[in-house]
Length: 113
Length: 111
Image (cartoon, rainbow over all chains, first blue to last red; front, side, top):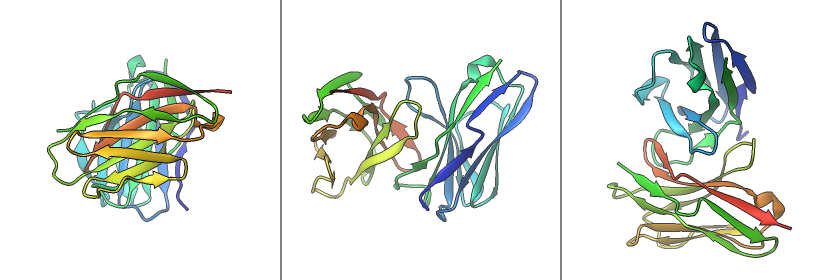
């Protein structure tokens, strides 16, 4: 199984809502990543988890809160988002954090109204 | 710190022809990997090919091959026998703990 799954595929939320994005992999990978991708732009790294511990936070606003409950699961909790946060949110995983290719999920298309 | 530059925002190729996408990079790492990712419209980003910097031999994956020039810090992707399914945004990337992506090249395949 070389698949990274993400739910939901699409999400529309108001600025006062609280929602969560979910990412799952069963490849035994110990590094997981959240990226934000705006239209026609490359992905921008948000967070890196290595062995279930947050190792990189790229100065992301606190309205985005990551969580790694176990080695297979990664969540991104969303609260009080702004319209400019509308984007494609990609999850990725790799065997360990380092010089290895990352496997990407299909993404969650988020729209903030 | 790493930088990746893709100087061709858009390219097109006739079906069955060959096309080369350019990428240059800069890194302070002595040992690193380079990647080409493909992202079709509204679809998942997938790895096309990877190159270990310590290997002199250019990587190949079926119709995809790279021309890796380490001294020039150049890493181009050649797609042979182009197919309609090759139409996508192609991102060049490098990095260790975190990937740095180029801005991408949008490839169109003309039937």
